[in-house]
Image: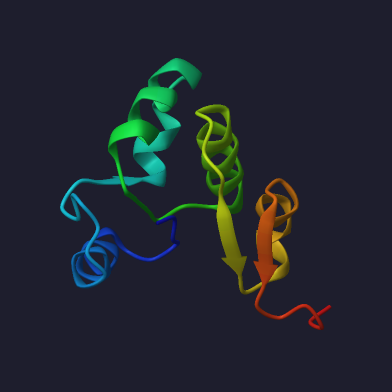
Length: 98
């Protein structure tokens, strides 16, 4: 789960939806400290990424795909377009918004 929400909110939602490790959350600030190799290791173990910017989301989608995973994403604004554009299963929640 990749969200712009606060880590606590993301962890609570992760627990509600049954993610394997809802209490391990990486934030956008954490992601900024990781190089590509470190990020590749983290995406294999972490289920929740919080306080992410559009740039973080794109980086995560790319890392997940590089790990051989299919990525489904939805977005609620134009700032999600790069990440939506980079995956096969993107679905913009508001396609008519310009």
